[in-house]
Length: 208
Image 1 (cartoon, rainbow, N blue to C red):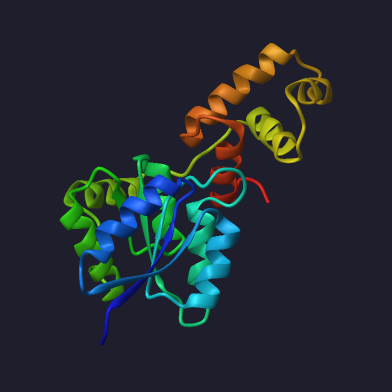
Image 2: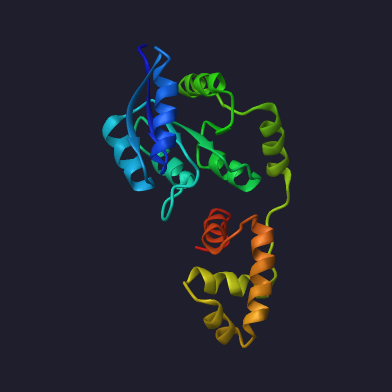
């Protein structure tokens, strides 16, 4: 079968170096490449054809780890994608799995567990610790996100690139009212900023 070939995707060089050292210490794993951004990850995965893509969730501006997962999993003879991140949120956990990730690990996981997870992902096994498995089931059973009509109006304008002032003008409300609606939208989506809110909203089918 040979060594498990891995592509490491993280926007922090120090993290990539540390993960490379960890994985290459195992004779059953071969790191074939690194990428610092979403587009570079897809390009490298297409060119190098690794068996596993070990990918951070946050990759700076543009495509995030969920986007990378979806793009990589759409490739012919697609590699497994394993998310390795510091972010532990249910919406992102479920989003990564829905995009086709083979598992979701936190960067503070035991090093031996990370190595084993890479091999498990390569073998086609789902990689989640018991606590995360329980949370996935709970998230799947949770009711769908629902917005009020006015919140939906604000979200659609936000998706179109409108500023708070432009949204207020379009809806004939104050900027303070817009900020209140945005706070409610962020809370419902489990997001902490506009860009993450839009990523989650698109994934949930709330905006096109």
